[in-house]
Image: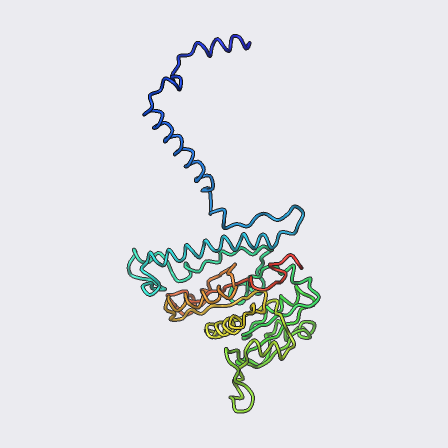
Length: 341
Protein backbone atom coordinates (compact mmCIF):
# COMPACT_ATOMS: atom_id res chain seq x y z
CA UNK A 1 0.00 0.00 0.00
CA UNK A 2 1.46 3.44 -1.01
CA UNK A 3 2.08 6.19 1.53
CA UNK A 4 -0.43 8.45 -0.22
CA UNK A 5 -3.23 5.94 -0.04
CA UNK A 6 -2.37 5.14 3.58
CA UNK A 7 -2.53 8.81 4.54
CA UNK A 8 -5.88 9.24 2.87
CA UNK A 9 -7.24 6.28 4.80
CA UNK A 10 -6.06 7.73 8.07
CA UNK A 11 -7.38 11.15 7.27
CA UNK A 12 -10.72 9.64 6.36
CA UNK A 13 -11.25 8.09 9.78
CA UNK A 14 -13.67 9.81 12.10
CA UNK A 15 -11.94 11.95 14.74
CA UNK A 16 -12.73 10.38 18.14
CA UNK A 17 -10.54 12.60 20.32
CA UNK A 18 -10.84 16.41 19.88
CA UNK A 19 -7.73 18.60 19.70
CA UNK A 20 -6.16 19.49 23.07
CA UNK A 21 -7.15 23.17 22.82
CA UNK A 22 -10.81 22.17 22.42
CA UNK A 23 -10.95 20.03 25.60
CA UNK A 24 -12.58 21.83 28.58
CA UNK A 25 -10.19 22.47 31.54
CA UNK A 26 -12.04 20.13 34.01
CA UNK A 27 -11.68 17.25 31.60
CA UNK A 28 -7.97 18.03 31.11
CA UNK A 29 -7.43 17.82 34.88
CA UNK A 30 -9.35 14.56 35.19
CA UNK A 31 -7.49 13.06 32.24
CA UNK A 32 -4.15 14.02 33.73
CA UNK A 33 -5.06 12.38 37.04
CA UNK A 34 -6.10 9.15 35.31
CA UNK A 35 -2.92 9.01 33.22
CA UNK A 36 -0.82 9.65 36.33
CA UNK A 37 -2.51 6.86 38.28
CA UNK A 38 -2.01 4.40 35.40
CA UNK A 39 1.70 5.25 35.18
CA UNK A 40 2.07 4.91 38.96
CA UNK A 41 0.44 1.47 38.95
CA UNK A 42 2.63 0.31 36.08
CA UNK A 43 5.75 1.50 37.89
CA UNK A 44 4.99 0.06 41.32
CA UNK A 45 3.64 -3.22 39.93
CA UNK A 46 6.54 -3.93 37.61
CA UNK A 47 8.33 -6.06 40.26
CA UNK A 48 5.32 -7.96 41.56
CA UNK A 49 5.81 -11.11 39.47
CA UNK A 50 7.53 -12.98 42.33
CA UNK A 51 9.23 -12.38 45.68
CA UNK A 52 10.47 -8.79 46.17
CA UNK A 53 13.57 -8.19 44.06
CA UNK A 54 15.36 -6.66 47.07
CA UNK A 55 15.61 -10.16 48.57
CA UNK A 56 17.90 -11.31 45.77
CA UNK A 57 21.55 -10.38 45.28
CA UNK A 58 22.89 -9.09 41.96
CA UNK A 59 24.08 -11.84 39.60
CA UNK A 60 27.76 -12.79 39.74
CA UNK A 61 30.18 -11.30 37.18
CA UNK A 62 30.35 -13.23 33.93
CA UNK A 63 32.67 -16.22 34.11
CA UNK A 64 32.90 -16.25 37.92
CA UNK A 65 31.99 -19.31 40.03
CA UNK A 66 28.40 -19.10 41.20
CA UNK A 67 28.14 -21.21 44.37
CA UNK A 68 28.12 -18.24 46.71
CA UNK A 69 25.58 -16.45 44.52
CA UNK A 70 23.39 -19.56 44.51
CA UNK A 71 23.61 -19.77 48.29
CA UNK A 72 22.59 -16.12 48.66
CA UNK A 73 19.57 -16.68 46.42
CA UNK A 74 18.63 -19.85 48.32
CA UNK A 75 18.99 -17.97 51.61
CA UNK A 76 16.67 -15.24 50.33
CA UNK A 77 14.06 -17.80 49.37
CA UNK A 78 14.39 -19.57 52.70
CA UNK A 79 13.80 -16.24 54.41
CA UNK A 80 10.43 -16.23 52.66
CA UNK A 81 9.75 -19.72 54.01
CA UNK A 82 10.44 -18.51 57.54
CA UNK A 83 8.11 -15.53 57.04
CA UNK A 84 5.38 -17.87 55.84
CA UNK A 85 5.89 -20.13 58.86
CA UNK A 86 5.53 -17.16 61.18
CA UNK A 87 2.30 -16.08 59.50
CA UNK A 88 0.92 -19.62 59.63
CA UNK A 89 1.65 -19.89 63.35
CA UNK A 90 0.06 -16.51 64.00
CA UNK A 91 -3.04 -17.50 62.03
CA UNK A 92 -3.48 -20.47 64.37
CA UNK A 93 -3.32 -18.34 67.50
CA UNK A 94 0.40 -18.51 68.25
CA UNK A 95 2.82 -21.30 69.14
CA UNK A 96 1.28 -21.98 72.55
CA UNK A 97 -2.08 -22.74 70.93
CA UNK A 98 -0.81 -25.28 68.41
CA UNK A 99 -1.07 -29.02 68.95
CA UNK A 100 1.84 -30.91 67.38
CA UNK A 101 -0.42 -33.83 66.51
CA UNK A 102 -4.06 -32.63 66.25
CA UNK A 103 -6.74 -35.29 66.15
CA UNK A 104 -10.49 -35.73 66.37
CA UNK A 105 -11.46 -32.52 64.60
CA UNK A 106 -11.09 -32.35 60.83
CA UNK A 107 -11.06 -28.55 60.87
CA UNK A 108 -7.90 -28.66 63.03
CA UNK A 109 -6.26 -31.75 61.61
CA UNK A 110 -4.73 -30.57 58.34
CA UNK A 111 -1.19 -30.28 59.74
CA UNK A 112 1.29 -32.14 61.93
CA UNK A 113 4.49 -30.95 63.57
CA UNK A 114 6.63 -31.64 60.51
CA UNK A 115 4.49 -29.41 58.24
CA UNK A 116 5.92 -26.34 59.99
CA UNK A 117 9.55 -27.33 59.40
CA UNK A 118 9.79 -28.14 55.71
CA UNK A 119 13.27 -28.85 54.23
CA UNK A 120 13.04 -26.03 51.68
CA UNK A 121 16.65 -24.88 51.70
CA UNK A 122 18.00 -26.19 48.39
CA UNK A 123 21.43 -27.81 48.51
CA UNK A 124 23.38 -26.21 45.61
CA UNK A 125 25.07 -29.55 44.84
CA UNK A 126 24.15 -33.14 44.15
CA UNK A 127 22.01 -34.83 46.81
CA UNK A 128 22.19 -38.56 47.40
CA UNK A 129 20.96 -41.01 49.99
CA UNK A 130 23.43 -43.55 51.33
CA UNK A 131 23.19 -46.37 53.85
CA UNK A 132 20.58 -49.08 53.98
CA UNK A 133 17.06 -48.44 52.78
CA UNK A 134 14.62 -47.63 55.56
CA UNK A 135 15.90 -46.82 59.02
CA UNK A 136 19.64 -46.11 58.88
CA UNK A 137 20.10 -44.30 55.56
CA UNK A 138 20.75 -40.54 55.34
CA UNK A 139 20.63 -37.81 52.69
CA UNK A 140 23.85 -35.90 51.99
CA UNK A 141 24.66 -32.69 50.15
CA UNK A 142 27.67 -32.59 47.84
CA UNK A 143 29.20 -35.94 48.71
CA UNK A 144 30.90 -35.98 45.30
CA UNK A 145 32.72 -32.77 46.25
CA UNK A 146 33.60 -33.86 49.78
CA UNK A 147 34.90 -37.24 48.62
CA UNK A 148 37.62 -35.55 46.55
CA UNK A 149 39.15 -33.72 49.52
CA UNK A 150 42.61 -34.86 50.68
CA UNK A 151 41.27 -35.21 54.23
CA UNK A 152 37.65 -36.00 55.13
CA UNK A 153 36.53 -36.06 58.78
CA UNK A 154 33.26 -37.75 59.77
CA UNK A 155 31.76 -37.95 63.26
CA UNK A 156 29.02 -40.45 64.02
CA UNK A 157 27.24 -39.95 67.33
CA UNK A 158 25.07 -42.98 67.95
CA UNK A 159 26.20 -46.21 66.30
CA UNK A 160 23.88 -48.98 67.52
CA UNK A 161 24.20 -52.22 65.54
CA UNK A 162 24.00 -50.80 62.00
CA UNK A 163 26.97 -49.11 60.34
CA UNK A 164 25.77 -49.19 56.73
CA UNK A 165 25.77 -45.41 56.54
CA UNK A 166 29.31 -45.01 57.85
CA UNK A 167 30.55 -47.86 55.66
CA UNK A 168 29.05 -46.25 52.57
CA UNK A 169 30.75 -42.96 53.44
CA UNK A 170 34.13 -44.64 53.81
CA UNK A 171 33.65 -46.38 50.46
CA UNK A 172 32.63 -43.15 48.72
CA UNK A 173 35.47 -41.07 50.20
CA UNK A 174 38.82 -42.92 50.04
CA UNK A 175 40.56 -40.38 52.30
CA UNK A 176 37.82 -40.32 54.94
CA UNK A 177 38.14 -41.35 58.56
CA UNK A 178 35.10 -41.80 60.76
CA UNK A 179 34.99 -41.35 64.54
CA UNK A 180 32.09 -43.12 66.24
CA UNK A 181 30.65 -42.64 69.74
CA UNK A 182 28.07 -44.79 71.50
CA UNK A 183 28.02 -45.84 75.16
CA UNK A 184 25.39 -48.55 74.53
CA UNK A 185 27.45 -50.82 72.25
CA UNK A 186 31.03 -52.05 72.14
CA UNK A 187 31.96 -51.69 68.47
CA UNK A 188 30.87 -50.76 64.98
CA UNK A 189 28.25 -52.85 63.22
CA UNK A 190 29.28 -55.72 60.92
CA UNK A 191 29.35 -53.45 57.85
CA UNK A 192 32.63 -52.05 59.21
CA UNK A 193 33.79 -54.65 61.74
CA UNK A 194 33.83 -57.39 59.11
CA UNK A 195 35.63 -55.34 56.43
CA UNK A 196 39.30 -54.79 57.34
CA UNK A 197 39.88 -52.12 54.68
CA UNK A 198 37.11 -49.99 56.21
CA UNK A 199 37.85 -50.76 59.84
CA UNK A 200 41.36 -49.31 59.46
CA UNK A 201 39.78 -45.89 58.89
CA UNK A 202 37.08 -46.22 61.56
CA UNK A 203 37.66 -45.31 65.21
CA UNK A 204 35.15 -46.33 67.86
CA UNK A 205 34.82 -44.96 71.41
CA UNK A 206 32.40 -46.13 74.05
CA UNK A 207 31.41 -42.60 75.03
CA UNK A 208 28.12 -40.78 75.46
CA UNK A 209 27.59 -37.34 73.88
CA UNK A 210 26.29 -34.46 75.96
CA UNK A 211 26.04 -30.71 76.28
CA UNK A 212 28.47 -30.81 79.23
CA UNK A 213 31.56 -32.90 79.95
CA UNK A 214 31.23 -35.56 82.65
CA UNK A 215 34.07 -38.05 82.37
CA UNK A 216 37.19 -39.19 84.16
CA UNK A 217 37.63 -39.70 87.90
CA UNK A 218 34.44 -39.36 89.88
CA UNK A 219 32.09 -39.94 86.96
CA UNK A 220 30.16 -43.08 86.02
CA UNK A 221 32.70 -45.39 84.32
CA UNK A 222 29.94 -46.86 82.11
CA UNK A 223 28.65 -43.43 81.07
CA UNK A 224 31.53 -41.21 80.10
CA UNK A 225 30.08 -38.01 78.60
CA UNK A 226 31.96 -35.77 76.16
CA UNK A 227 31.00 -32.59 74.35
CA UNK A 228 31.71 -32.04 70.67
CA UNK A 229 34.31 -29.38 71.40
CA UNK A 230 36.19 -31.67 73.79
CA UNK A 231 36.21 -34.53 71.29
CA UNK A 232 37.49 -32.30 68.50
CA UNK A 233 40.33 -30.99 70.65
CA UNK A 234 41.12 -34.53 71.77
CA UNK A 235 41.27 -35.71 68.15
CA UNK A 236 43.11 -32.65 66.86
CA UNK A 237 40.28 -31.61 64.51
CA UNK A 238 39.23 -28.08 63.62
CA UNK A 239 36.46 -28.97 61.17
CA UNK A 240 34.08 -31.90 60.62
CA UNK A 241 32.85 -32.50 57.09
CA UNK A 242 29.86 -34.65 58.06
CA UNK A 243 28.28 -34.91 61.50
CA UNK A 244 25.67 -37.60 62.19
CA UNK A 245 23.59 -37.53 65.37
CA UNK A 246 21.24 -40.39 66.24
CA UNK A 247 21.01 -40.50 70.03
CA UNK A 248 17.41 -41.45 70.78
CA UNK A 249 15.98 -38.15 71.97
CA UNK A 250 19.10 -36.68 73.55
CA UNK A 251 19.63 -34.63 70.36
CA UNK A 252 17.57 -31.77 71.81
CA UNK A 253 19.93 -31.06 74.71
CA UNK A 254 23.07 -31.99 72.79
CA UNK A 255 22.40 -29.82 69.73
CA UNK A 256 21.21 -26.95 71.93
CA UNK A 257 24.51 -27.20 73.78
CA UNK A 258 26.50 -27.30 70.51
CA UNK A 259 24.76 -24.23 69.12
CA UNK A 260 24.88 -22.16 72.29
CA UNK A 261 28.56 -22.92 72.90
CA UNK A 262 29.67 -21.61 69.51
CA UNK A 263 27.13 -18.78 69.24
CA UNK A 264 28.12 -17.37 72.63
CA UNK A 265 31.72 -17.22 71.40
CA UNK A 266 30.79 -15.66 68.06
CA UNK A 267 32.05 -18.72 66.18
CA UNK A 268 30.46 -20.67 63.33
CA UNK A 269 29.51 -24.27 63.96
CA UNK A 270 32.58 -26.40 63.15
CA UNK A 271 30.95 -28.76 60.65
CA UNK A 272 29.74 -28.61 57.06
CA UNK A 273 26.51 -30.56 57.35
CA UNK A 274 24.43 -32.41 59.90
CA UNK A 275 22.32 -35.55 59.61
CA UNK A 276 20.10 -36.05 62.66
CA UNK A 277 17.21 -38.31 63.50
CA UNK A 278 14.75 -36.21 65.50
CA UNK A 279 12.72 -38.06 68.13
CA UNK A 280 9.85 -35.67 68.89
CA UNK A 281 8.38 -37.82 71.64
CA UNK A 282 5.89 -35.79 73.69
CA UNK A 283 7.30 -32.50 72.44
CA UNK A 284 5.06 -29.47 72.81
CA UNK A 285 4.95 -27.37 69.67
CA UNK A 286 6.29 -24.20 71.30
CA UNK A 287 9.22 -26.13 72.78
CA UNK A 288 10.08 -27.74 69.45
CA UNK A 289 9.79 -24.42 67.60
CA UNK A 290 12.22 -22.74 70.02
CA UNK A 291 14.74 -25.56 69.51
CA UNK A 292 14.45 -25.60 65.72
CA UNK A 293 14.77 -21.82 65.51
CA UNK A 294 17.96 -22.04 67.61
CA UNK A 295 19.43 -24.42 65.02
CA UNK A 296 18.48 -21.99 62.26
CA UNK A 297 19.96 -19.05 64.16
CA UNK A 298 23.22 -21.00 64.46
CA UNK A 299 23.34 -21.36 60.66
CA UNK A 300 21.71 -24.74 60.01
CA UNK A 301 19.40 -25.03 57.02
CA UNK A 302 17.25 -28.15 56.36
CA UNK A 303 17.54 -29.53 52.84
CA UNK A 304 15.98 -32.97 53.38
CA UNK A 305 13.59 -34.75 55.72
CA UNK A 306 12.29 -38.30 55.78
CA UNK A 307 9.73 -39.49 58.35
CA UNK A 308 10.74 -42.74 60.03
CA UNK A 309 7.54 -44.79 60.29
CA UNK A 310 9.06 -47.96 61.71
CA UNK A 311 7.58 -47.39 65.18
CA UNK A 312 4.16 -46.90 63.62
CA UNK A 313 4.30 -50.22 61.77
CA UNK A 314 6.09 -52.28 64.42
CA UNK A 315 4.52 -50.96 67.60
CA UNK A 316 1.30 -49.37 66.41
CA UNK A 317 2.26 -45.80 67.29
CA UNK A 318 -0.36 -43.37 66.02
CA UNK A 319 2.05 -40.41 65.71
CA UNK A 320 4.97 -40.28 63.30
CA UNK A 321 7.23 -38.64 65.87
CA UNK A 322 10.53 -39.70 64.29
CA UNK A 323 12.01 -37.95 61.26
CA UNK A 324 15.43 -37.88 59.64
CA UNK A 325 16.62 -34.34 58.86
CA UNK A 326 19.66 -33.18 56.94
CA UNK A 327 21.08 -29.67 57.31
CA UNK A 328 23.78 -27.63 55.59
CA UNK A 329 25.69 -25.18 57.79
CA UNK A 330 25.74 -21.76 56.10
CA UNK A 331 28.05 -20.31 58.75
CA UNK A 332 31.78 -20.02 58.17
CA UNK A 333 33.35 -20.99 54.83
CA UNK A 334 33.52 -24.49 53.42
CA UNK A 335 33.21 -26.22 50.07
CA UNK A 336 29.42 -26.60 50.14
CA UNK A 337 28.73 -22.84 50.32
CA UNK A 338 31.90 -21.10 49.15
CA UNK A 339 33.60 -20.54 45.77
CA UNK A 340 37.05 -20.50 47.38
CA UNK A 341 37.23 -24.33 47.28
